[in-house]
Image (cartoon, rainbow, N blue to C red; front, top):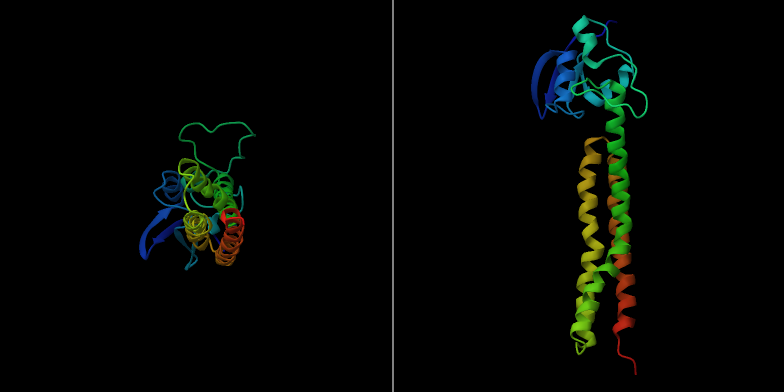
Length: 207
């Protein structure tokens, strides 16, 4: 079965096109569309990213000469080489860029999960600075301040994990998004209890 030479695009329910593959490539390079847009292939819809993956790394689609030049079938430049200004990106380069961005998003989500244990002691330095300025502050007041800073330090990363999860959902990684969301809440709750327990012994007056 021959490959299509004209493609329709869909984004948030709005369908445009059909466009030749060269035009799709130009819009992708100009950021007029993204790898998350849907493209119609053989009466079915898939993301542009999935279409590039399905057609292969360096294979150029058959069709007109203009279409063949759209995504470029040339081999990628050697490491360290720079593309000329306005030069078309190969499917491999576009896919690698998308894959690296997705990997960064996954790593970022797990880093925010781990920060639920690291941020509370950093935020507690503000309370320590206050204690230096006002050494007569009652221990109970210090503990209340530490409770507030600990809550912020533990649960603030949860919001960033949810923000990263939006990107993961769009890329079809709902399972990883759910895992990170559950892990961040669990670590935030455990960290909150642990650090409050430590701070209580630090500020509790000795007999």
